[in-house]
Image 1: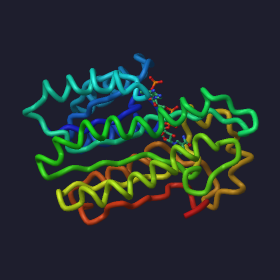
Image 2: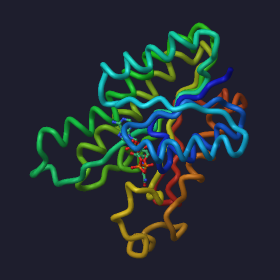
Image 3: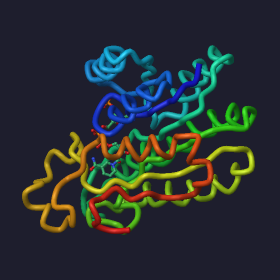
Length: 242
Ligand code: NAP
């Protein structure tokens, strides 16, 4: 079975990525933290379209949970191939740095950046043995240009962009590509409190993006035909910045 692991697949961008990858024939392993109802809905949508998937909840900010839950899954699926890893789960916790608490810095770094290290290191071994893999990291416009109120989030996503480029150079000769997509403003729970009406004036395409538009780029990078693209960051921001 050809599998794709998508972290944060219960809602928003991750959900759209799960549905898209399932439509391309992958057995999708849907990670999430706590929203069982939304995760069930992702799986239901996949199955209704005759796709294949399963749920694998664990907290990506916990190295212990990653090694226990994902480690066990990998041990139990030695005959399967985990071809695609999408590091998508993320949180933001915006506040001016002056007022930022230790936990706000640490939680955002742990969830958005440390998770990449612990999850990818576990998954990488199988990809190296099979000499094939597609790793796609979901970063952000904030990690490219920085946004005020997001020193924690921008640092995490900027760090993830640099890690993407470094790992791409380590594993390229083994048939593994490592890329990132950098969304701007996408309509999900994360941007619910931001007014599209007010913001669209500064977006050349004049609207927020959809999770499906991000999923489309992820699917492209995940495809076998994208094998000569690595260490790249694709901006999906309606022309705001590149
Ligand atoms: P969202 O709607 O808030 O969904 C977040 C997803 O991540 C949920 O599935 C959630 O699971 C999961 N998650 C959060 N913390 C987790 C943890 N510790 N362990 C496991 N899963 C966890 O967010 P989104 O807008 O789709 O964002 C997805 C990614 O895109 C993030 O990395 C975000 O930084 C990035 N991004 C988003 C935008 C945007 O405009 N929306 C822009 C740039 C970048 P539960 O349902 O269980 O909580």
